[in-house]
Length: 150
Image (cartoon, rainbow, N blue to C red; front, side, top):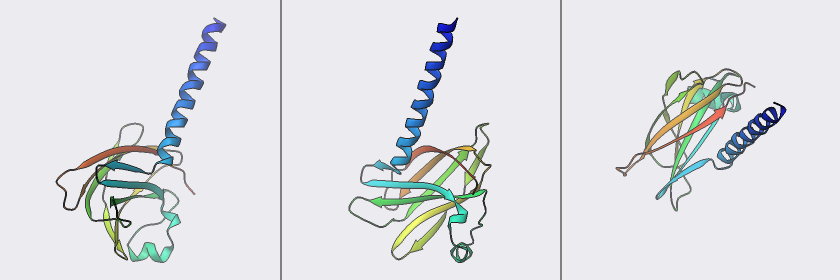
């Protein structure tokens, strides 16, 4: 019986390490590559944005609010380009919410932000669809994040 407990403990540790390693890999590569495009993504607490910038773009700041940031770069460029961006996110009980992206243009760069609310330590699973301007092909990818309030 103790050997079964040992095996289960080893299996649990192995799965935990594997899950942690997968999350670390995802965090270390903040983009997906699709042919000529790199699509960068991040999720961060809205309180990181200075109040005057949040006001200028009509963004709500708060400890339980976050922003999903998407930027589409074509190979050989250093600034985000225009795209059609949509997506959603799910929590652990599979409640799905749509993300409403707004386009932000700053000094020849374009990126997209979507606001959301979350609970502390909530794990959210994101699904994003992007069609770069001038391309007929849509690109989809998924990622997850554990959210923490400030």
